[in-house]
Length: 250
Length: 265
Ligand code: SF4
Ligand code: SF4
Ligand code: FES
Ligand code: FES
Image (cartoon, rainbow over all chains, first blue to last red; front, side, top):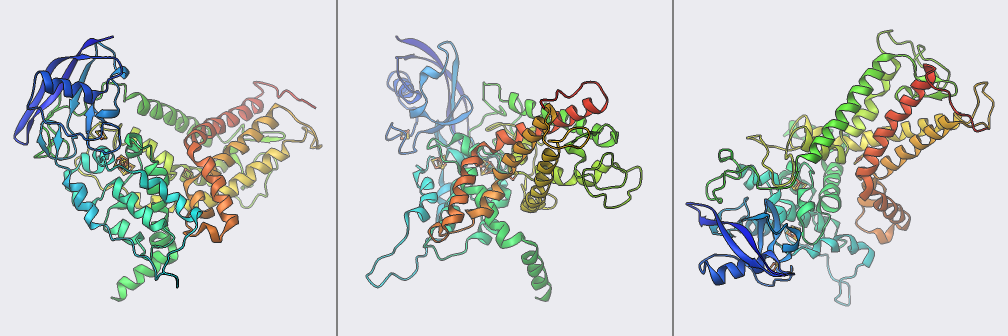
């Protein structure tokens, strides 16, 4: 069964833009990305849209559909009423390049700032050894496809551009947690997480977890455990007192 | 349509869109429910904490007044430790612990940051504040002390469990009797245990802080157990909150004589 859907698509660039109305045919089983491709093929050949795998695995097609950050290739048209108008905009936390394509380099900058994994010396036979149950917990975080939907929805930077230098965002705070839980990593990342990457700015309101297409429990399994680790390092009263005294001496 | 928010989604370079959100669902419903239930609870518990009466009906004591530690207490459920000035009700000495525990709870933080402080009211709905520092400064920096309230909360759980055990007596103080109130107090204690054991700090303390689970099999088991409860922490938070108020109300109705406790045996 086909029907004609009402689409409102944001078109423009960094200098300005607006929502434009289109009517596009929808067939059964299609996703939002299919409809944009049809729009591109039939009405707006110059529409800019980024995509790659169309299978929810490359993380390229992130946009906002009816105001919610989503992967367009995983958003089924069947979830909308046929007479509903569907609004598609670029990610609203990052600078726009053109139409639905945003410049996500904020995320790559943060990725470069992450202190790398530091393993110990190898065993005599040249191997590193670890137990499965010791790495299991952080394996959940390796499912990340770097779609940056969590980075886009996080109000710390979405609603406060000036926080960007001080806040790494859920995806990279999760990376710190992953390494901090890693049985072979030799660096203490707890102070760094709080003082340099802005973990304290996260107020655990869980929007990152709500939008993650991989279903990673970012807040419960990475951010809150990391906050607790920071408490061990920074805010347990004897440590707190010790730090205060040391600061006074200096 | 509202004006562009220059500090956030209207920042230079981002896609020009004036709407605070383009969400078309009822995103305001969840914060509205949160505010309604929490305000109802706060009003009810404040009234009850100052009422200073009707919190004891042999053999039941209301969780708002337990442990009752001053000589002004009704009934005899806990050692009376000191004379308090009359204007302070016995509830006021102890409520700071459950209050602090829930106020610093990771789940309630999410709930009230969203619903009361609108930071953010819902995902992808712009918050109304121009500046934001999260939990990096006083007073919110003190949220980091949650684990100490967790420990203190455990003491209360033990006491409320003890109260539930005392409820297996009749009005004459003889053991091995039971009424509907016993069941109410017992359920209340169980729910409080579930709420406390599913706590994120608890999860960290029992094993979450370890790097090598393989070297601590017992703590790994404990962590696995808490990790099973933890995803339901939100549900336990709400159910136990409502049930504490209900338990108090039940005792109040008995104490004022509005209802009689159905006795089983
Ligand atoms: S839980 Fe923290 S990191 Fe995740 S969206 Fe909310 S504030 Fe951002
Ligand atoms: S954590 Fe989830 S939402 Fe964030 S970038 Fe990875 S896959 Fe995307
Ligand atoms: S196109 Fe690859 S995730 Fe959507
Ligand atoms: S009681 Fe909710 S997280 Fe500790």
